[in-house]
Image 1: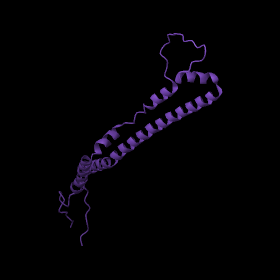
Image 2: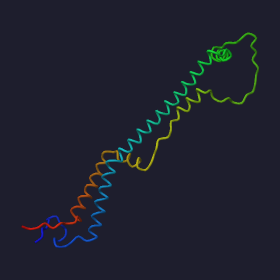
Image 3: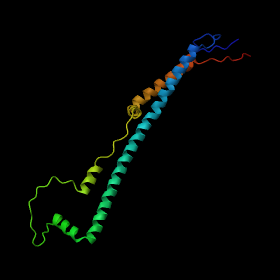
Image 4: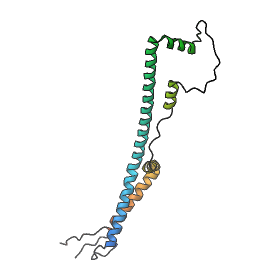
Length: 173
């Protein structure tokens, strides 16, 4: 005599067929994949966002270090170069040496000074990494949507277990 589950959709004497095994695997694996994606993808999207912030801050720190190195070189050069000191005083302090004469010269537009170039580069951080998993993770970070995916995936796994799970025969006493 065989045990018949009250939840079984099949007679107890019938063995599980290949179609039943197929549907069991399809429903259970799809449900488990949906459950894993609902749990892992939002965390993956948050990780990529943090990596993007880290890369932007690292870029900004690198630009600040380059600017500090430039300023250090400028300060060291000012200590030893009288021509540089004179030019800086002319530019920033409205200093004019004796017998100074201004000549009009048409020059092409000058490149930006080194500090300006470094600061402009600092304003353009590297682009954050983007892929399809991160986009799906951002969509699933909404709590209502995440809960819906978890519920549907658990229902799929439960349906696979109750409808198509291979039944084992229990010995009768």
